[in-house]
Image (cartoon, rainbow, N blue to C red; front, side, top):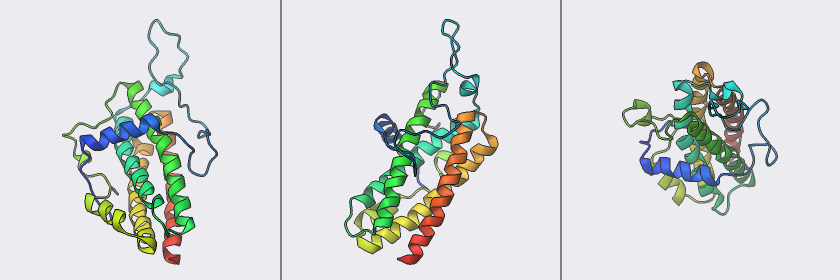
Length: 213
């Protein structure tokens, strides 16, 4: 089920636009909450003229942290788009729409966080076009898959959404585990661990829902 998709400049632009207006809750948590142990304030290195009020760990990052954020932003953006497609349809089981609502609520704010980190680190939101990983992002749906989801209705749409999102989540988990192992920034590593925990649980939930349809 794993699909690949070339991440275009338009897709990244959409990710940035979504980050600018993202708001809501984390998956399974109340509004305005934040993950324990995470510092989502400015992660910029204090200048000589500015007070050193930001923890040093926030500005301490490596290439793995940068790649994690640059890849996960468009990956999350597609998950939000898939969730929005299913939420607009009628005849979708309540358990599936509830899951889609939680995915959208969790991943929107995470896009905002990662975009902010990249800005604070002085890194571009888009990955360099010569990087192989921009052309082979695990779990991404192709345009044909998205078109099929758009046109499907009722139970067929619910099954398609669950099947596609399972593959999408599995790709995100792989990317997040790489960050957990190779990342340096404390906030980014913590987010990667949170993604693995939340999305592995959602994968099992989706498999159970799919079996019941």
